[in-house]
Length: 458
Image 1 (cartoon, rainbow, N blue to C red):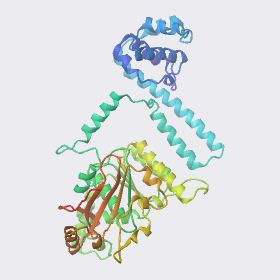
Image 2 (image 1 turned 90 degrees about the horizontal axis):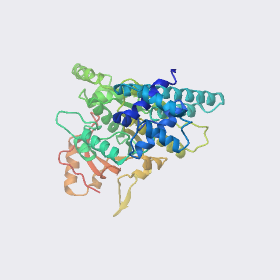
Image 3 (image 1 turned 180 degrees about the vertical axis):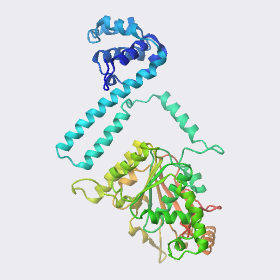
């Protein structure tokens, strides 16, 4: 019996082959009973799985005996049905094909049920944003339905080994990690990995947008597919900064409206290469659901490797206005963290820090600025809790230099028209905390490593 929603022959073939062939038995060990449509076949699979889990032999006689002891033989269609299934199975080489048919049929059943419930929610007048988010989660569950949440140590060890091997830096080979392109930063963090939720906090006008853009552009130059959600700048303003960072002139020259002939030559040399980068913008995706839709469009059409959001306080939360702003930001942060897990990619989220943190404290009659902390994230401590990594950007002044060597570096940078910038890694679940000192070239909108780094550990 065949249908787009079930296939009886495929189900019987995989059961019969599992009772005959050791390799075919291994192939059904992760098969969920719910994936089989016919109840008799579900009972037989239960017997096969139980015998295999107990390291017992699995064949027609053992399955029949297991079912009979538990008074389940009739539920399995009786002994004649077991014999028929066993005797009708052949061609172990087609086991994968049969399993694929079963998975596809089950997926269709799940999607049909989800579509029915989706229609019921719409008819009931449920919130449309929440209903869409529910449907996206259902589709994700359909894709991952075979994952029962149990992971053996053997599987975990092999997955970890494969992850370490894929992350290993090899000469002339790309890494799976997302690199910033700033050597001292990448040496400290080792790059960003899949599913990481990374917060970048800074006081207003310190340079967090450019820092995130640096990550995006350099990731795209590595061949990664990147989505930049910018709620503060439009696509032209962003691209002007990319052009400046890639050598197309200073930002002031580019935006002056009076570009020289030499300037046009520089811009033309940069426009070609950057136009081929696998980098996409969205300047309207101001909710988690809208970001999800953009991400899944890329996911379904070539994949996606990194999302950056500039910045979280400009986003909106769905609902009826009953939540205060702190609760809304917490909900948004939670949604972005879950999206990183869904897509198994890192998500960079920019967050504003409170302006009050710029006041500093009085030391010997002088007000001295202080480095920010992640607890200063505006409107929500949830970002601090959700983040795997929390980085803070800080533009120190000379009073914050801790020794003469740092003061010398600070002055040298200032003489060259550069600004010292400290990247404070305030939280890092996968590694050490610490600081990295960079130079910020405001004319060209780029961060540069300082060869003689003034980094100091916590």
